[in-house]
Image (cartoon, rainbow, N blue to C red; front, side, top):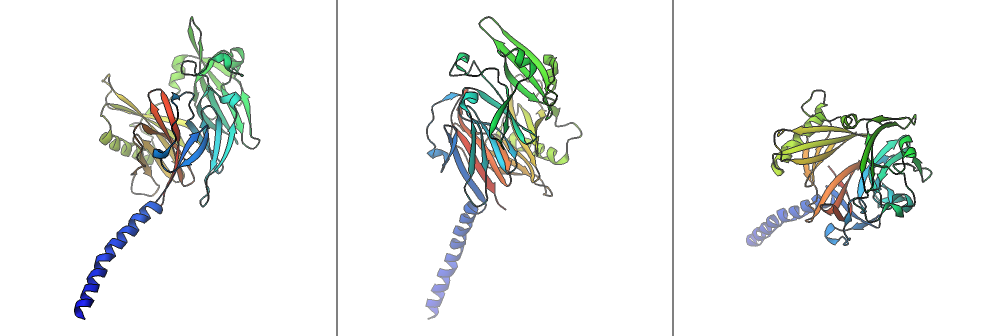
Length: 366
């Protein structure tokens, strides 16, 4: 009888840690992290179990391929710019599937490159242009010319053109660079190209007054307003995220790198730019752009390779998370935050071409 009891006790003791281990592993997958993958198919997000099961897409230049180029939040929705189509909004309820709404117009967006989304009161401003050098058609096929700024009013589900004075006079110029410096003041770089010449002009435009003035190239470049991260006046929490990002980058990147931190804060969708460079005398360097988002829940930075640096208020300091690994040839290109969810954009790219693209909805719990 004692042998039977002893044997039973040994069996129970042996099984307990194995059972707990399985349960803990299951909790890490189903409780701690939420992941939902989407692939763009003709501009529309379709769920996929993983990128290994994504559908093949023919390569096209990044300027015209279906891909997410920027996004803004407005109310309870995230509005994402999709090249060639327009804007798609997504709502992410806690206990139900994502809800999408499409503001697509092929007459406006087909063959054009979307660069920037901005909040403007209860509307969204969108900048786009026709890239003649990297395209699959020619300008004469476009049904509308002279488009640079378009306003979406979600409530009325329509687009309205905003045409600065320079563009009214010169509809054959393309606004190849759009540089917002405040929510009302924007700088444009205008380009004209024909078989004989290429010309550039620079203007500063105020959307509220509708006034515009010519600027020099030097003044235009100054409006990027890069600030060295070593300068004084940078908030302590943001500085902590910069430092944590640099420490992590040193372990995965070559030392000769220039780092550009592009920071967006809350509802202010205008980028503030910060730079870091310890190798000013070298001619060979890597340029790394790190997007940073500041919300009421904390500060987040996305590093190359899918590393997320996150700082939450009242925490001891920034922490790092590794996002799901991507297949070879894929990369994360940007992100935004909607409530407690992160939305990371991904692409399958090679040099100037992009194939498949989409986004990952990701949430870490606890």
